Length: 228
Image (cartoon, rainbow, N blue to C red; front, top):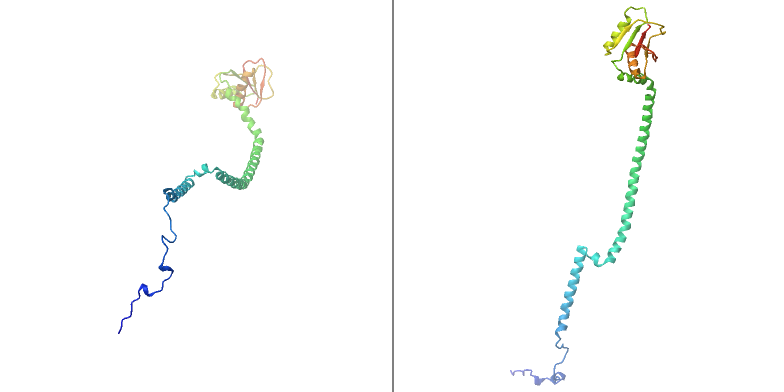
């Protein structure tokens, strides 16, 4: 068998590609300067620095100093909210305090009523306190004052008996005597000076005599006249 001829360049017809133009053909880039090649890196570095500063300002709170208009806006927004919160708190506190105030007012009113009620018995008891007030001068009685006990009754030795009662009470200058002159209608304790009022009242209390009077020209500072 005969071999087929191999295809060679001469076996094809010539076309436009068999005679290419001289020199490079197509899109290509020429050599760029150093500044043009560094610009992309500088842009990346600046963007990274700005992003880092922004994150740091937000996290540290320094952004309010750098951007005061934002801080003023946030403060103006938070101020009404805080005022409304304070007003709501004050209204709640006033609402919670109003029952306690009414309760305290009612308690004070009841306390004043109870005090007035308790004060009225004390006023009614004031007459019963008068005997203790009349006996208070007895504390200032002078036990060394001369006391003369006159027996105006028909009982023998009655003046001496009552004089011993005063002596047992602490009086050191007591004398029993008989009457010499006109006698009163009932038992009485006479005193001569205002300084002897306390002593005369104390003597009357010790002997059970209610009549105490001031008389001038007595034979002793205090004179007791026994008539019953």
